[in-house]
Length: 128
Image 1 (cartoon, one colour):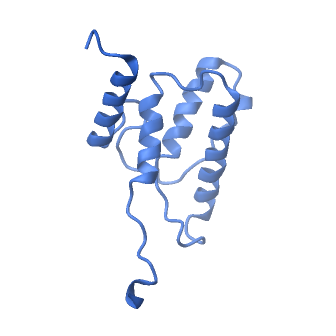
Image 2 (cartoon, rainbow, N blue to C red):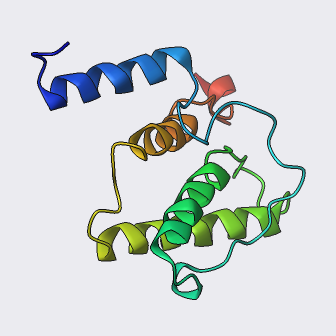
């Protein structure tokens, strides 16, 4: 691995995380929280290391897939997740170096958890 390029190492790491189904960082496997709680906004946290920790906590919060087929179930938690995703996008777009080698596993885990999940049955199934 001494002669391997950085992108090749990263690609292998991402692939191994997806195959294992867990994150190497703080966003690992486990039971979802019983109730999602709103985390502080990035602008409320002054210390850079605390902002990085908050970034990881927000990624972890957004790693739990939710059923959006029924808007009445868990509406508060869905709104918290939606707002947190918007805050994450804003933070990433406005912060130089928001991603580091340490945050990649958590980012990949959050994306994979939301992309690679079962989908609700379609109402058109009986019409085919």
